Every structure is written in C-alpha cells, then in structure tokens.
Image (cartoon, rainbow, N blue to C red):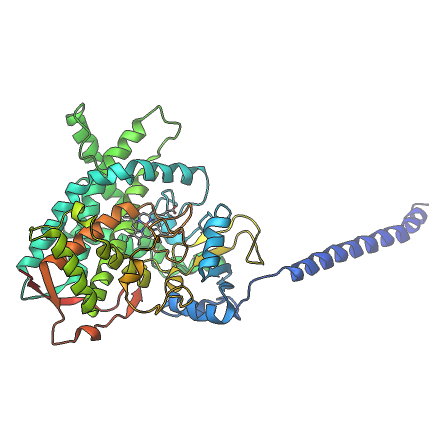
Amino acid sequence: MEIFSSLETLPLSLFSCTLLLMLIMCVKWISFGSKNKRNMPPSPRKLPIIGNFHQLGSSPNRSLQILSQKYGPLMLLHLGSIPTLVASSAEAAQEITKTHDLAFCSRPSLTMPNILLYNSKSIAFAPYGDHWRQLKSLVVLKLLGNTRVKSYQKVREDEIGHMIRVLGESCGNIVDMGSIFGSLTNNIISRVALGRKLDGSKHKKLVSEFVNTFTVFSIGSYIPWLSWVDQLIGSVARAEKIAKECDELVESIIEEHVNKKKIEDGESNEGEDFVDILLDLQKDDTSAYTLQRDSLKGLIMEAFVAGTETTQTSLEWAMSELIKNPRVMKKLQGELSEIAQGRSVVSEEDVEKMPYLKAVIKEALRLHPPIPLLLPRKLMQDVKVMGYDIRGGTQVIINAWAIGRDPNLWEESNEFKPERFLNNSINYQGVQFVWLPFGAGRRSCPGVQFSVPIMEVALANIVYKFDMALPNNIKNEDLDMTETCGVTLHRRSPLLVLVSPRF
Ligand code: HEM
C-alpha cells in the first residue's frame, strides 16, 4: 500500500521538479538577458587573475591616458578582480564628483592604509559614513579652516626665513632643491601638527618610512584570495612594525602635550597645534561626537602623509618649470621686484597682489598634479554615468593628470604658460572640473588653504632673492623633466641647481 502511494506521487514530484528547473532556467535566462542589455563602458582585454594590471606600466597616469584615447573617457578596467572605472575627461569627472558625488563618495578598503592608519579610522581612506563625515567636518572647521590657517602664519614665516638663510649660505654650491623643499614642508607640518620639529634623524626617517609604506603594493587589495602572498613576502609584517613604531611616537607626543597642558591650564589658547586642538575636542562633552584615540592619532599621522610630499613635489615642479622657461622666470621676477620694492622679504600680504605668481603655481599644478589619479573612490550603488551602467562596488579612478593635459580643453596643452590662468575663474575648489589637482566634491582635499600659502610665499621669496642655474653647463631648456610615481608623481632625477644672490 505504501509502495503504491509513493509510486502514485512519483509522476507528480517529477512534474514539480521539472517545473522548478524550468523556472530557475527562466529566471537565469532573464537575468542573463538583462545583464547583456546593461550598457557597460568599453574595456580593454584583460588577462586571467591580474586583469588589466599589465597595462598600467610604470607610469599609470600616462598608460591610462593612452588607453582612454582608444576606449573613451569612461572605461572599465579590472585591477586583479576589482572592477575599476577610469574617468579621463572633464565631463566624466563632473559626473562623478558633482552629479553623482554622494554615490561615488566612498573609498575602497586597501591593505596598507588599513595597517598604517588604525584600520583607516582617519579621513582619507575611510569609507563613507557618519565617522568620515564627522571627522572631515572637524578637520575642515577646527584644524584647516581659514582662521586657524592664518594662525600658522608665524610658523610659515619662520620656516621660509630659515630656508632662505640655508640657500643664502649655499650660494656658489650645488643645491638639491627637493631636499630644501622637503625640510621646509616637514618642519612646517611637524610644528603645526605636533608643536615642534621632529627631533633627530631617527624620527624623521621613521615618518618618511611611514609615508613611503603607503605605496607598497599589496596584492591582497586587488586579488583578495592571494592576500596570503603579502604575508609571505613580509610586506604586512614590515608595515605593522612601522605602524607600531609610529604609534609609540605619536603616543609619546600626546603624553608630552597632556603634561604640558597640566602646567599651562588656564592660559590662552594661542599657538595651539593639532594635538592640542584634538585633545581639547576629546574632552568636550558638549559635542555629540566623541573623537576616539585611534582617530586622533590617525589624523596626526595623516597630516604627514597628505601634506608633506604633496607640497614639496608641487614646489619642486614649479621651480623646475621656471628654470626650464626663462621667459616666465623673468616675468615673475619682474612682478616680485615691483611689489616687494627692495624689501628683504616677500610677505603673505605682498603675495596677494601677485596674480602672475599665483598663475605660475596653478600652471605647475596643471602639468604636474602631485596625486595624478586622485585617491580611488568606491561607488556605493548602481548608477548610470554618461549613458553607461555602472555597478555598485566599482572602484573609481579620475585621471586628473590627463584632464589637465587634454588638448580639447587646453591650448598647447603640454606647454608651461601661466598666462592661461590670468583673468580666468579657475579656482582651487575644482568646480570647473578641467583642473583638479586637489580633487573635487565631498572627497576633495581639505588641505588647500594650508598648502597654497606655503607654496606661494616660499616660491616668491626664492625667486625674488636668488638666480638659479643648472650645474655642468646644462642648458635650461635641457632640464630633464621625467616623472616617476611614488607617494606623489615626482621628479625622477633630483633638481640640482647653482644658486646665486640677485642683489
Ligand atoms: C599641494 C598640496 C596638496 C595636494 C596637491 C593635495 C591633493 C589631494 C588630493 C588630489 C586628494 C584626493 C581628492 C579626491 O579623492 O577627490 C586629497 C585628499 C586629502 N588631502 Fe590633500 N593635498 C595637498 C595637501 C594637503 C594637506 C596639507 C593636508 C592636511 C594637512 C591634506 C589632507 C588631505 C586629506 C585629509 C584628504 C582626504 C579627503 C577625503 O577623503 O575626504 N592635503 N588631497
């Protein structure tokens, strides 16, 4: 009887199984169809496992520019297994940083920043969310706002004065301008962030190792199932060691500040550095946001990563272009002589009357944006960009370097012509999307107001006080301008010059 009944049900279960199978196939077919109907951006052919990595070469900004000439201003690459949208035109940049800014506002999770910056608990590599929003507005308002940046004027003047004295003592000798600018930016950031210069070469070396570790390639960031390779070759262990040593350094500096505060309690807040300000904010129980210790330390270390080499590289490129273009150098010296009128120092107030100086710096940043591909973003939901369907989770790169050299946007786009920035409205907020050295939109750089006065006043004083020539009778126009990628896009060869006083 039992056998009978089970036999009876057999055709029925076979029927339902077949029906279920057909249903699954139908759903699959429909979803495959709709996938095919998705209008994906053009993609260069990729290789198994590594995807398009082999096409980036040693100069990704240039390789991506060349690829975009073939595949268009929006292309979809695969870096390992990570789908990566590459934007190479002003229109594409505008879509990402303005039209869909919120959707494109996150950052991908990357191994090295996670190790070095307390699991990306500071700003630059934090995913979008409450934590990032609170921290960014804290930095914009309390550390890098207008009034606060003005209060660092004394530090800027001191350190630029010191740099000019060092150059004065080096007249007649060959000077490495990169190292001069490196010391300047390091000293300024150290004094503003920590309240003092880093003592001894040991700490300077540690901080420079910390900054450089950000560029150590991590295979796990792009091919997650191969992340054990990072462990095997020791890159994770090395980064962890540097992170630990830096953490100890920042902890000791915080301790110094806590002790100093106990002594100075009740005195005025003048001359406060980042650590002072952040410690005060941590104690502020009227604020709805609690600043965690790791975020505080992350912000301090991030200032070194984000602020030193970027400003140093920009100065080095601006100086290189001035040396290579004597016509521009002469015109700038003319403006400086006219405004400074024989005074020994060019002040921050003088610089406000110097449109050509400002144009020189903007033009140098156009040709040599220190972070040529900005920082990678991550799309948080599916969106349509310039008619293409882009899936949530895609990583996004904006080739600011290529946009700055786009011949459709810039006449004689590879030439150094500061005049193009006179009488135009292109400003540091990047709202025109044709010039993006500091990015644009919610994720743009909060350090603009901090670094621009350093660049302007430092360059003004050097050019006002010294003539520069290349050693070994190298002609100015033969100066090697080859670039190489590190934390920033910097000169491959050091900028060695012979300095002589102008008066
Ligand atoms: C010449 C100097 C500098 C240049 C060219 C520069 C450039 C940039 C660029 C291109 C980005 C990425 C923007 C994007 O993804 O859209 C960025 C982000 C950032 N920069 Fe700067 N930067 C400079 C100086 C500074 C300084 C001095 C500080 C702080 C002391 C700073 C702090 C930051 C931070 C915290 C971010 C992350 C913003 C976020 O993710 O929301 N930068 N910078």
